[in-house]
Image (cartoon, rainbow, N blue to C red):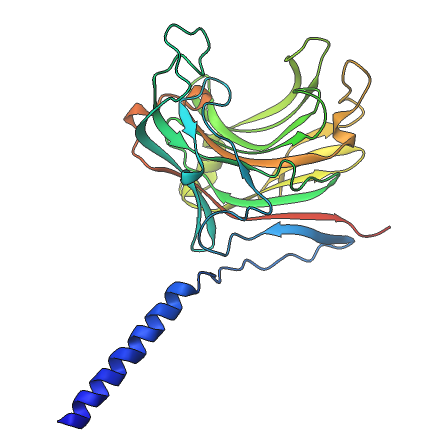
Length: 295
């Protein structure tokens, strides 16, 4: 009887130790093999394989009401790594606006409350690149109100003269769900961009695969000194020649470094989310950047 008790105590202790060890080990093995690309080398990747917050060595957060009169309040709490993925959650929750000013004409300060929250992370001041192949594997939520994006901005000048590349946007265009691939640069008028946009009706994807929205897909940018090409699952949707992307002052924003942004907006072009189920999730498996290794 004593031996049985001793055995049970030892077994309990062993199981407890294994349980603690599993909780302490937050690294998740969800590795999608890195592609070997001729004449290119992998110069940076983010695999999101450690549970917790995104790596602060690479990522910073936007906070509050930021752009486009969107509905969400951006906060770091909504971006987390879990199971080998970055998960950005759009949530229906009411928060007081600390910047509220009664009677203000500014949309960022005239809202007493935010009724939704989400997250936007970027590599500004931490990582930027000039040219290369960018691959991002992600799954987007196509609920009404959802506006996920993968995009880059230039590190110099104000928008749009710094240049913007929308590797992926999903929102409603004239009420129709669409995926967009865009390139924008400056004009002679401040805050007014020249756009080269390709708008792909979402129905084009679901006609081929009714389960398309439930799956992960690879968005890709090939950016050289001559062109920007934007792909979805290796299908080319936008080609923009850098000979055309000239700002009013003669500079070319796409011959200077850009940094990366991943965000989930709510409302605005995404539509009214009030009838949608929450949370709305935007999941990213990896971000990989390759550059020319042939020279």
